[in-house]
Amino acid sequence: MADNLRAVMTGLDPAYAKRLADAFNVYLANLHVTLIKIHNFHWNVVGVDFFDFHRELDTVYEEVNKEIDRVAERIKMLGFYPLGSMQDFVRNATLQEAPSMPYDTFTIAYLVANDFAATARYLREVDEFVRETTDEFSIDLIANALAFLEKYVWFFTAYLEKMNYPQVPKQ
Ligand SMILES: [Fe+2]
Image 1: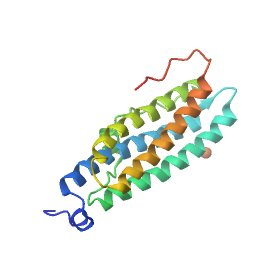
Image 2: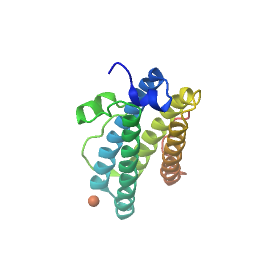
Image 3: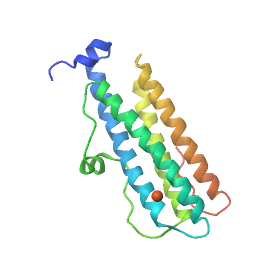
Image 4: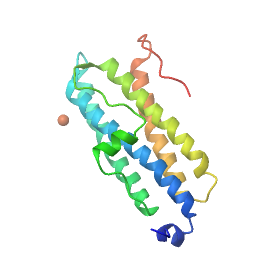
């Protein structure tokens, strides 16, 4: 569309709205890859903590699912289309998918912490240009997203502590 009516009406710079919608679509793609991966791990977890991980991953799945809707709806408010196909999600995500196979709980904790941390680092880059605006909605969305992502980085790295597992890369 020639004019982004929603951005203009709410006082957002249309070029900024486009830049942010594109950035949020990458976040949305990462969330979808995460969603599928969490289901994969929920089904294929093996080992002593099977029951804990099977249950906990269900909780994580629900939270990721709610976050997906928040981000997609923000993209609509900005005047753009959220990505809507599996192909687009895989193509645009910065995260890799995982094959269906047995996973021990340490590997799952490591992979989940890594992915959540990578997405948090990505959102910090987005945050840099969002904070130069008065787009309080998106500033708040990113702050809440980081709270959610960093909580799970803590949970899953705490599980790995003193386990001699490779460290999650630092920022
Ligand atoms: Fe289930």
